Length: 237
Image (cartoon, rainbow, N blue to C red):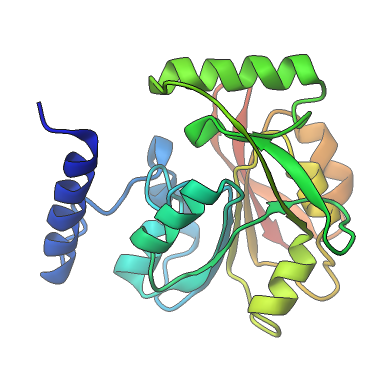
């Protein structure tokens, strides 16, 4: 059996080799073909993305294909330090911000995150300690991960991250996969300064997002609907 670390390196080499000859065969990692679905609305080269909840920068990434195959640039936001390090390895051309996004942040503030791979979450993000703990344990089981751990990570607003890393930049796509923190992240965005053209948001509570977005955005497609959660694409009016 090939050790997991070696398997990842071999997969990365295969992917990069294909990309070098213009093939995107191994370069569409988004869950439920979200990168293909997004491309229907964002069929252009040279765009700009911001992806929060970036994980390792490749696994289930909504923006990897756009960067590697369509020449996009952008920012990846990931709070778990080990995953942020993988982002830097997998996406050397992207800006990687190691932080958890919140609605408001004081200088030096941190929040606790619980590791669960693709389902890592901020403490109480799912509404209660119990609900978040259940989510974390389910994530461990689904992904066959050995254990969780808690880590304190810097807390930043999305406005702060964008002002620091891409001031004045037109953002074509903001992708949010933040395990229950969607409304808080959006409350931390100054839409008067930064209003992305499209928002792709995984959510369990669309009704919580409507008041925050309805003035400037409309839902143009439900990209995925799993009943308990959905991926919605919002377009700027």
